[in-house]
Length: 292
Ligand code: NAD
Image 1 (cartoon, rainbow, N blue to C red):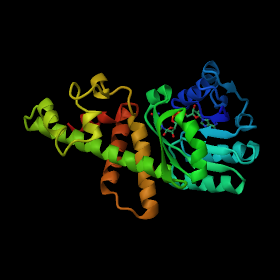
Image 2: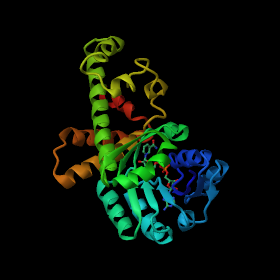
Image 3: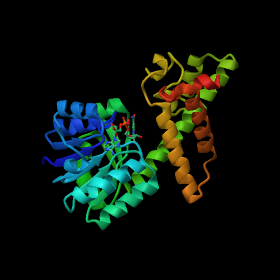
Image 4: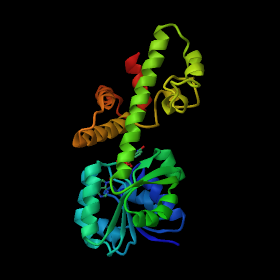
């Protein structure tokens, strides 16, 4: 069944996601602050809305893909809550802090709306190809409504638990990713110093207990392992600034519940330094250059 969807936030990720919904025949009313983003959405088969309220007017579902929690909170408070029909489902796909995700879901419920957090794994290419993974936090009934729409934009949709659980899954996963990438880089740098050939080390560690996604899908050493951003001077891929954003969200969440995350803290520090040194747009595996 085709749905009437309001889509707010048509940036690097949202543009591809909205295009996939339109391509599957959904009626997508799109809004972004950027005129260029709106023109791209129109070319991809979306209807262009004059503002966020117009995008959600009459919508059964609202998808947001915005930079941070404060933007989601603001768009919900300023436009979505007032302009959305009662019972509408709000699906926030942005990566935001767990506390804000829970707060906006509670505020939505007070207004007779239903909200889920549904952050994604996968970058711009996956958003365009419709192969994202969604991790969803919200009540069972809300998840059941969101699942078909998310499936139209992704290859996997997983119900993580109640509101905020999707964001929790995302930041906990990416905390592992940041930590294993640094550990993998460190090990390759040490191997080099010890006169151990990078390919030989890869051949051993990739089938031993040092194996991880950071090593075997995203090897930070050029020419070793499958094709990865290392092979193109760390261009494209997962920007270090976004890894730092996710690590900061993880540390914020850890502080809020008194969790002990010493390796996560160190990863945040190292990525902060990497970004300060001008590598914000480099792939996060490029941190190996600072460890060598
Ligand atoms: P982006 O900055 O490219 O896009 C955000 C868009 O939101 C921009 O086009 C901006 O104009 C728009 N916007 C901001 N405030 C608005 C408002 N009030 N009303 C309407 N539009 C508004 O960011 P992105 O890379 O698309 O990322 C979006 C989210 O997805 C972030 O939370 C990010 O952490 C997460 N994410 C990104 C990636 C990635 O590889 N880029 C991967 C996974 C998750």
